[in-house]
Image (cartoon, rainbow, N blue to C red; front, side, top):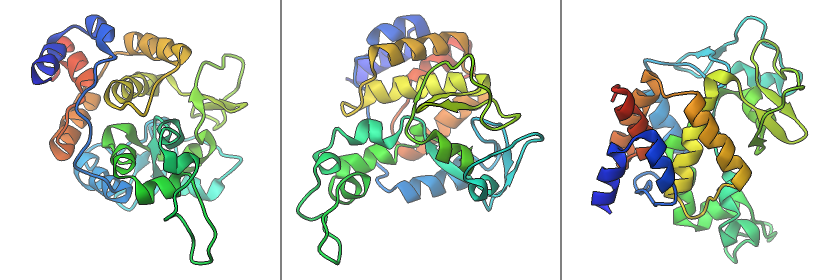
Length: 251
């Protein structure tokens, strides 16, 4: 496996796409979502406090300086702070776990009511917790944007206006189109998650879109720097991003 990963990291981005079925080493260091958020805030983003979708600045205490022209018709209170967005929504991999789908005997409230879903999977299944806390899949977003995006898949919505004024994030009919500035990072996050975790598998249509975005919106320095930092903290590599950075000479 180590030989395969070394070989893949040296391949060109085009050749690497042929190997997206290969499993990469996964997060086995951090299983707390709350801990992952704190690490990102304190150790990954202190020198680059910008949100993914809207390029909005945020402070150490999570307060957002909203861009000029930004507007939110829903979740207005959440527009004042950043939240950590699962680029691949938790539900997209969570449903692979029995605890999410049907619950568990231990998932019972103090009043005796059973529950399932994310709360149960997080309580019972260690592998789910590692997956949920994978920092490569977490990006800062304005809270209102995170809330409205929900667990919707990404697509192109050419006739849909922006849902947030000057921030060109579009959401309509349970689908989302991210701004151009976010598409490259999103695509490589999806490709990483698909190559790393058996619990997540992209549809053919989603894979085609992510491969296209990966080619159209090449990696930039911050994405490479971010990936290096997370790899050191989480103790596993993101060979999708690393290969693109190596090919571009910015690793």
